[in-house]
Length: 251
Length: 164
Image (cartoon, rainbow over all chains, first blue to last red; front, side, top):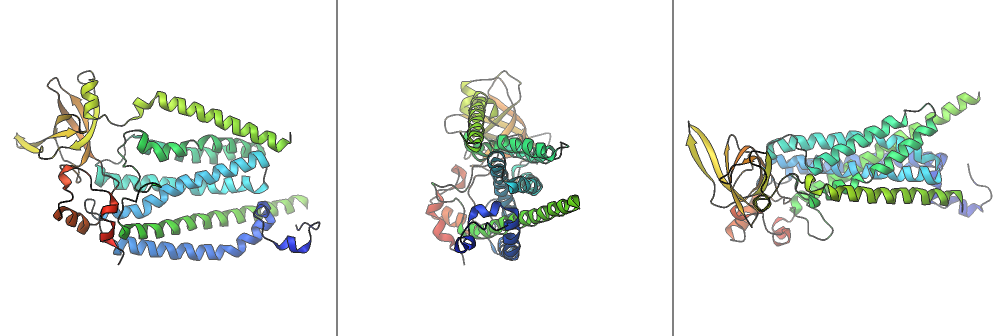
């Protein structure tokens, strides 16, 4: 689908808007996919081995602190994934980008699983440290709401016979739900919660020793790249499926 | 106006008004969204006797002792927020992180002598993550005693843990 009205040198130049073209995205993603996969695996292995075996135990939490290397990246990605979903929703509602609906459809399930894992690892961490699996404080509850938003988004997508209607309704839900993200982020500052305030901030030095921060960074990079890799694979499959359906229908 | 621009404005204004609605709702319910109340809040605004409340604060240094009644130890300690302190009694297993200087949340009720009888005690942990050696070094240098509250700012001890 090359635009023939452009001079050839401009055609070959990389332009971010061209990624919204499914055909171009497919070719681009197929090239970068192995690179994302390999770097995700590499970062995750480095982070996990470093975090689980070579980083020090916490002075008061002991070895239980190692749950952090999974829980914290999951928590960041749960919110980050939903933000990506909302951006897709915005692009779909306003600019009707053909890829945005598909991307939202494919990000949803991955994000829901990540949020569930964040809640589960948090619960497993809470029992030995706090003394409880679950409390209804503002942080925990707002993350649970995020999980239900993901589930609602997936359900709404398939709730209509007309797929376009489903996309539109789900996009509106995604945009409404985006207000849960600042609530999650600032819940620990605005209200008294059992969950501790965040260790990292833009204005303060992190309250974590470097010997724990580095493995955490690698774990986060690995899981974030893994998230991107999964969404990329799913999105490529979805585009191909759609193209096949198109061909079959035209026959 | 182009249709795209129109859609942009409709979406943005819908989101803007929705944001205002959420801010209003949250600020109206703010006092109900807190998970626990501090001792000074409880003393200044006493609740009806016998209602279940969650009391949160730091376990006061040198306030923890045990009394034995029918061979079950009851922990007695004071919870403080720096302005007021409330005596808490609790019979049962305390969480591992429970100690003097730790932030805790006690769930129970206040009696007329202002003694809080807890039927559950949860330990909070602060946002600081540091290895044992650093905590030990800080304690030895006299910069910090865990009994009196959370550790000092990370900037003061970060240099002790350069990655090997």
